[in-house]
Length: 456
Image 1: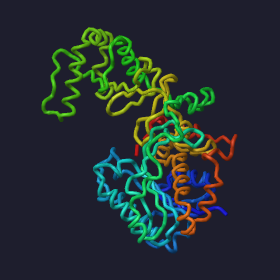
Image 2: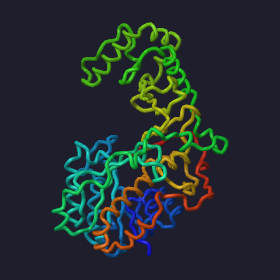
Image 3: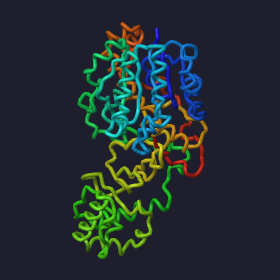
Image 4: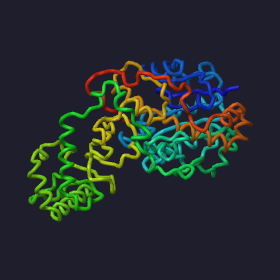
C-alpha cells in the first residue's frame, strides 16, 4: 500500500517527483502561482489547491489525512539575495502555517526545505524558532541543520552536477514530551560526499548536455554580440598574461591605470580589493598596458563586465574551456565540472566550449527532473524561473530515504508503516519511469531574452 503525502508551496513538483519515486501518492498540493500550478497539474495529475493560510485555517476539513508533509516554504525572507527580514516578513511566517497543520494532522514524517541562510548567523533566532516550533508540535528535530548539495551525491544515487546547498528540516513524530527532550540527535546527513564520490568527476559534457543537433530553437541560448565581445576581450587578457599567476581576488580593470588610487571613503572590503588590484597592475604593467592598447573598448564595458573572477584554478587559460557566469560581481570562470546553483535571477550558466547558455532541458536535468517532465508552452524565462525555485529531486529523494531509514522504528510507531515499507522497496535513485518519452522542454517558447534564468 503506498503512503500518502501533502505537498505545500509545491512549485512545479520537485518534492512530488522525489516522493512519487519512493512510491508515495500525493493527496493534496498547494501553490498560489497559477503558472507553476499548471505545470504541476500537467505532470503529476493533481491540481494544486488554495493557499496555505486558507488550508491551515481549517486544516481538519480542508486537508486530508496523510503520512508525510513536505514543503519548500518561501525562501526570499532568508535568502542572501534579499533583505533577510526573516520572520518579520509575512512570507517568512508561512512556516507558522505549516506548524498549524502539523498540530492538527500529526503525520509521521515532515520534511521542509529552504536556503542555507535560514540557519546562518543572521537568522539564528529564526532557526531556533523553527526548531522549537517543530518540537512543540511533537517532532524530533535536530538542532544542527541538515545541509546538502546534489553535487555531493553520485549519479547512481540521484546526484547532479550542481552546487546547491539547501537546508532540509526533518522531523519524526514522537510527541512533544520526547521531542523537547531528545534534542541531541545529529543531522541525518553531513555536507560531505556520499559513498566516497569525488565531485570533481562530474563532467558537464558527459553528464548534462544535450546532443547539439537535437536542440530546438538554439538561438534562444546563443550569446549576444556584446557578450561575445566581453568574452573575447578577457580571453585576450588571459593570453597576454599567460605567464602571470592569477590571484584569488577578482581582477578589476577599472583600477588598472597609473593614476588610480584607493577610494578611502569606500567600505574596508572594497578598499582592500582596490589596493590588491593596484598592486597587481604595478607588478604586471607591461602586459596589462599592451592588453589595454589592443582592447580600448574595455573601459566602455558595464562596470560588472570590467571584472573577471577566475575560479578555474589550473584549467586552460581560455574562457572557452570554462563554465561562465555573468554575475553582478563580474564575469566568473569555473572548471566545467559542476555548475553554481540554478537561481531565479539573470545568471544562466554559459558553457564555454559550446559558447551558449544551458538549455531548459539541461536546467531540468540539473534539478533532477526526469526526462518526461514537461514545462508546456510557456516562455523560457518563466520555465527557468520555476526550475530555479524548485526543490532538487535527487537530493530530496536521498535525504528523505536516509531519514526514514534512521527513524524507521519511531515512524512505524507513529503510524507510518507504509512510509518505511515503500522506502525500503524503492529504487536507489529517482529514475525516469517513462523512458523514451520526450516532452517539448525546449519548445517552451521563442521570445527574445528567454535565456534569462531568473534567482530565489
